[in-house]
Image (cartoon, rainbow, N blue to C red; front, side, top):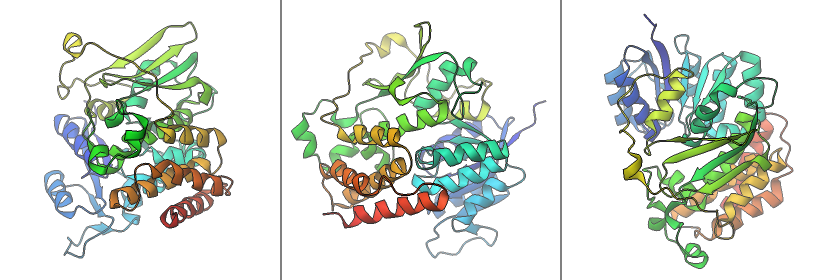
Length: 386
């Protein structure tokens, strides 16, 4: 009998965390929840803790209400969760740059990181690679696009190439983008978009921040950088194509010209399950059966870079390296926060990010404190930008 693997769910009450809980419920013979953390949703965390009876529970930002005496609080709770001796897999669904330190700690401790926190790789890709080598941990992506790339190329992972999961014999990676709510909008109309417009994603149900990132295509910029760090494929061989149906999640072109694609209904349950079970596949009934006829036709369109300049800013930051990806990520998070709060128009997001990159892209980036300093400087600049 296969022993159950202990799982830590960081961000257990968010969208990915709740998806992971549904997956765990269907596979109680394979996985058990050892540690649960949440940022601030105390009620949802308490309900999850009552269901799973984990060994460790952590709330990063308590609201002042009474907590069970055994609960941990503050950012240190994330580190305690990943270092728990019974945890073998850390599902990191923390939102934003706050997830990086937990990723590093898990890898140094030799754990598998099922990574839904793309900022870990964007902000600190080099540091993540060092931590994996130092501790023997591994990263398996949860993002649907990167899970699709791994599934297509799983037989070619390994070797001496760069990247956390270096690929052999691969010519090109093709990431798909739904195009978001503004796919059919003209450039001037996009510039005048309101918050409700940006949050109305046509195919995915997501949180407010990632919904805005999808509307601006900032999420695709982050995913291009993530693909480069994960798989070691050069930027000039990573492409983005618009695919409105969100059925083809990504494609891999091999050296002989063959192209493999991973298809499925838009659901995060499969990527979460695959990250937990990789390289195996578990029988599962959580995702609806794919109907190719009902899903047709499948369309592909080029990205309109003039309408979505944030994508180009992010890819250019990835190519530049150093602190530039960290600055892009932090500036985007801060700009989106201002947009959500009503103090920045949608049209102002790319200009604000560009100003931060112009000022801070050459900031030192030798270690975690330097990268966090670049992150903080970018947030301050965006907060004060007019």
